[in-house]
Every structure is written in C-alpha cells, then in structure tokens.
Image 1 (cartoon, rainbow, N blue to C red):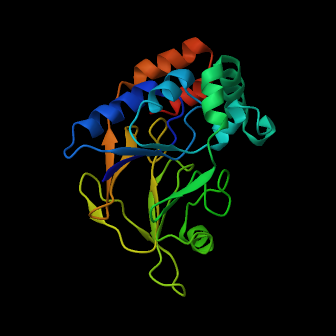
Image 2: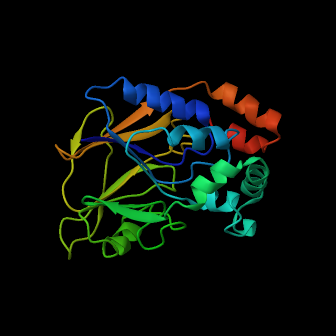
Length: 243
C-alpha cells in the first residue's frame, strides 16, 4: 500500500490541491493519507483545508500546536506576535464542523510499524526534532521501527542502527524511492509553509510493501495565496515567508 504523507498544511488550500494533483498523477495511486498535524494556522483557508482532507482515502490525521491554538486549547502567549495574530484570526473564522473535526484528533498514534506524532514521540505537540542529538533522545520514546513527525517544516531523516549507536542525519531522496531500514525518524516537510529555502510544497510517498520513502515537491501559485492572506488581514510577514 502506498501512503501519501502530509504535514503542516497551514490553511494553504492552493498548496494542498497542488500536492494532491501531483501525488494523484503518480502510479500506482496512493491508497491512504497520513496527515501529521497543523492543518490550520497561518494561511487563509482553514475551513476549506479541513473539509478537503476529510474526503481523502484512509485518512489518519493528528492535531498540531496551531490546530490546538485555533481551538483555544493552548495559550496564544506561547506564539510569536504574527503567529498569535494568525491563530486569533483562525479562531474567529473556524466553522463548527472544522472545530468538531480538529478537536477529536489525537496528538500521536501508531499505524502498522509506524509511530506518528506532530512534534516528537517524547513531546507529541511541541518538540522540534532538528538535529541528531534531539533525535537520539527520542528513539527511546517509541517502540516501532519508524516514527513520522512534522512541526519543523523541514524534510529530514534521522537513523539509528542499534540501541547503543548515535543517531545520524541522512539526506532526503527526492523523486525516487529510498529504502527504509530500522530505526528511522522521518519528516516529510511542510505542504503550506516550507522552511528549507524551497518554496514548493513538500510531501512524501511511503510504500508499505516495498518499505520505501520518496520525498516530493509540488509547485503552486504562491503570489495568489499571498494576496488572499493580505486581503484577509493576516500578517504580511507570514505572507512573505511563503517565498
């Protein structure tokens, strides 16, 4: 089975549609979707993104810190000024159906031999795994061979070959399946607000049969999203951050 791995959509419907179109053009088709959290926040399309992801096949979806902020489940003082403003705006426009969907999402789960968490298995909502040292501290926090995380908006892979070995960082293979080997922590990057100097939407395809991971990018009309963000009154710096 091929699984479409999404994270950090951040209410960017244009980017999400571009990813779904790109992934849908691949053969064989994906049969399930795992979304690692932060469906809303920052962007102008929270309700549209929530509505769309609910139509996707075999959906497993997590709650992220920005989702929690939109629901009033966390104090906005934990965010910087622009993130607070975006979270407050999202609170104002979030529909009852979107609220109902998001509030029932788990912060972590396991599927087959994969642990899923928005931030990390140690701190599922808030911790960033950005380096081998932090990855090392998290390998003892999950029992499966693999862990998928988001939150950092960076496509990353960390591997530890044995319990007494140190974690190492591995390069992401773009547009070609790369074999998985126990144990790994993998991050697909962000659909709606990438932060790795490539503004294209990032996602991954996981093949459970062949045990491979393929990082992919999808271009989209960024200027159109920026314009809608500004018209909605969202922070200009968040719009500029898309490029």
